[in-house]
Image (cartoon, rainbow, N blue to C red; front, side):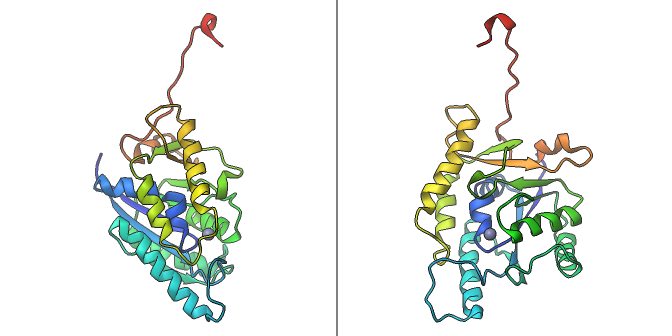
Length: 236
Ligand SMILES: [Zn+2]
């Protein structure tokens, strides 16, 4: 496969790791170039924080955590510094996102689902669709609600590092986070129906014109759903 330029436009400082961390690791390991863009500043994200921090201190802390998380990919994220809960599909945010999209000029783009639980997650999804002519893959939603993947990326070899990456977001981690990430990625792995695939990340592709070839832009050796042709007499 030719070397690709991958862009992940994610809403909050801790979203890259949980939603697409394993896939991005795999791209990097296969020699592709990865850019991570963090749209919102994380000032309103709840979690474990000392009570007397100003919002500026919270933003600075969350940037440090995002930089540590992305360091496993060998990169530093770009921060768009849009205020949390003010990330909306408006002209100002559009200009900010399209400028970054044009700077990166990606071959393939990852973002959150337009059906995800958080308004900032839905907004960046819309903004990415409106500014990218490259194929766009939507990541699994929070705890997989309202999401049936089109494609799966086998992250069995990357899962342990993905957990470490997410673990860098100390100020955002809530009790049970490891069980959630394990369960969601294990479920997606089980859906691949291959014993050797323990963990996977699931994606939907935005079905623009010519979308069917978009599968070829996922990391090499990603799981392709087998077409099962079974004679009628052998069914069940
Ligand atoms: Zn988020």
